[in-house]
Length: 382
Image 1 (cartoon, one colour):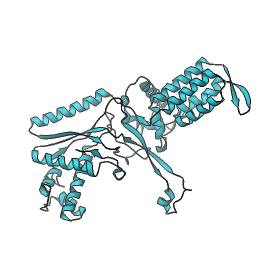
Image 2: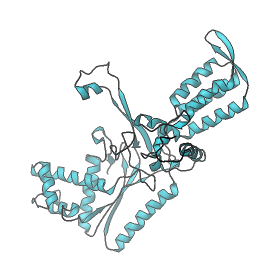
Image 3: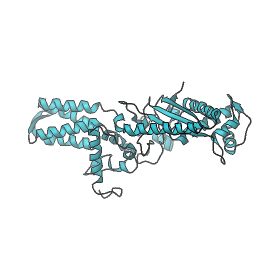
Image 4: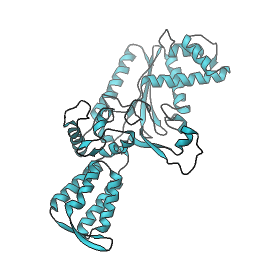
């Protein structure tokens, strides 16, 4: 354990036990900690009585660690081992029949599950089922294999603290109500993802990929800066097309507060300057963080993969071919169908309505977050 990140000797085992207990009791976890660059150093694979440091290729193990099915089967195997302690079981190895202690047979499976090697565990379970001559044990192991096979590479609703999630939305509502009392105009709308969403894919992480979680409330969210940024980018594209100018020229003029005297669909360039602000003056519209509405009994985080088939071609320019080995890279994404609550505020009702129009168009036309060219980050806008 000496290579742990400035943590007590038994911290890694304590973390594993804590996660297992939470999962077993259907209690929430702080996912922002579980997937942070520090904590995942000791929850991504157990071997030689210590936890391996996290790597992006180990992210599947971490998803498996958070699935109740894995914990259930692990407990059942340990219970079965306890019941059959010292029992010798008949197994068939090719053409010969021999006797083996049950714990010798079952221990590798328990190790597979402790290391979150689910695919290997399923494979070994199926092999043992074919060899073992005890019908009762064979039936149970076959049942465990089916239970493991049903695991989805995703995170269920129950891992979120629903009381904190509700509290966060209530706080947002209360804050917007207070702004209304101060004569701010508020635009508050809920939109649903057409496909998956990734925010902060390139952020620092031992996985080489990342997903943004709220550090206190443990939910994926879209920062207000990203909401404002994508709205501004869409506005620049619209005005560049209308004025036949380079988007860079539009961007520079907007940053400097230079009115180009152009209007698009009843939105003037002066409106844009007032909405987004300039290098020397803040905008008149407030863009809030977009909060997810996480529904019961639905998976809200999924493990996704991008698979580079011809890596030498992209890196060295070699001729692409079937002899190149694919390089799968796993990453977390917010599941499609998840709803997000977007909110804007301004003391100018006309400006906030125009900002909302631009925002909805941006979410519909160009998407938000990473991999938008592959269809990620788009919302259903009516």
